[in-house]
Length: 120
Image (cartoon, rainbow, N blue to C red):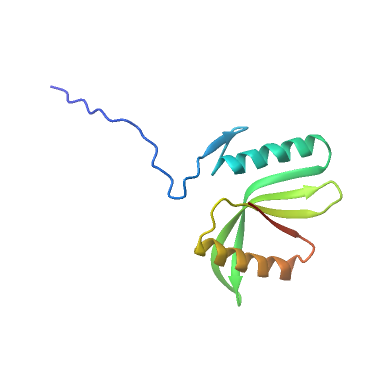
């Protein structure tokens, strides 16, 4: 005798009500993030930007000790050589604010020429 289990695959509701979205073969954490990626593709086609990357790992340090990793949503390289680190946010948590402050301080110390942007 075989037993057959039946269950429905349901997606767990997001704690922050974001809706994951696929775009160009990648899954983004939210609709807003996917739309920003689409916008970056159009800007690349127009020649405004040279290239962009998503979910780029940044290792955060304090006094030479590794504290945590932070994944910046987008790193954008403009045609004129400028670099922008862009974070798409719908909801800010205390943990995110702390990581952003660490990231901001470290990035400004190491690369003061980088542009840091929060898209809300």
